[in-house]
Length: 135
Image (cartoon, rainbow, N blue to C red; front, top):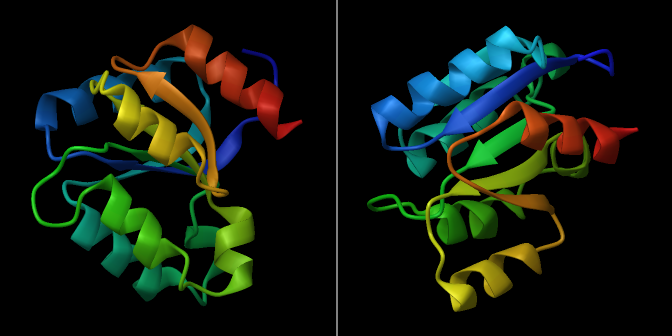
């Protein structure tokens, strides 16, 4: 991949195997310099809260699963809307889900912070498409 490398990616998924696979593809393709992993929507929101005043620790891309216990992708996005403009502008959300529920997909891709919907697993081709959106 020759396009721009992002500084930081945040993977939000309750499935450790999916996180491992996604992290490896991000590393292998050099899509991002750093990868943070959170295994729940709640811990991802807490992470953003903690680092909101240190821009270098804010992810440029948040890969977000829809189906997670307690704080799912929909709740995460609802809570995300309450963050300051600087965070919402820097952090682009990419849905990375195994869901093929058309209502879920339609509901989530209409969210103004979601730039793309990807069906798992994350691939080099999907990362390339995301890079193209960032240009």
